[in-house]
Length: 293
Ligand code: SF4
Image (cartoon, rainbow, N blue to C red; front, side, top):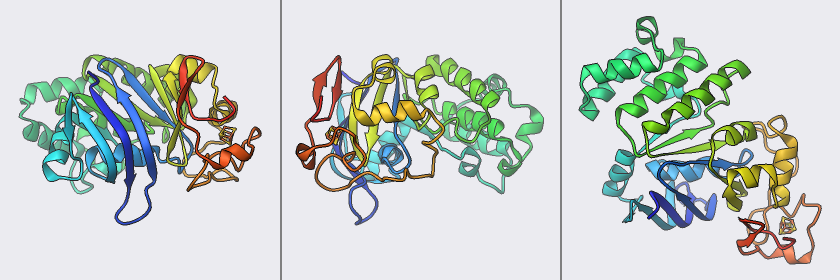
């Protein structure tokens, strides 16, 4: 049994078009899953649906073997008990009028965790008394990230979801955050990392899912997908590294929405078959959605 599985999930906002179209994703206990893609690929929308911040328009979410309705209040409560999210801009996820220490104590109170356990967590995250007495806007990127991780752990989540955990940090802090996320493996059953950063995904993930235009185009063991990609888009991502796939910047040739392969406007292998969306099929030890493979 998977810890979490998403079947044919369609996700969007309000009455708009679905941003994520038919995503299948599985998370097993003891593993880290990376969801990789450029800005606008739908990766953040997909994980926001797991905590009720985007609208599930179709498909199924199964948590620990039980189907959960993410559009119902009880479903969202159940998902939020199991899944804690660390947002891309962690400082903005704290109450700006309160000190960070106040927010952490509030979280511990809501989670029913004693003061001593909170202090241990705060110590593990190297959050000094001085840092706790500051307001979120006064923290550095690394301090805000560690405070957000501490707050997530207070709730003893089954799954931690981190959205672009290294994007706001300089290179030396990125290395610290990678070490920090590695150290969380004993605190939670599984992690989902949403990232444009191939290096972060390689360092942390067991399984990789690659998204483009709201569609998962390749997935499998992170080592295979990120060292010998099969889908032309995954190859482009790896060749670009992290330099040209910058969060917030769309590539010069955007993905194609609607029918057909979302990569066909910039794929060197595109032909007439690509006007129809390929099925996901096995190729070279992973799953891929491409007519040329
Ligand atoms: S389906 Fe066609 S356009 Fe899409 S990646 Fe494969 S060859 Fe390229």
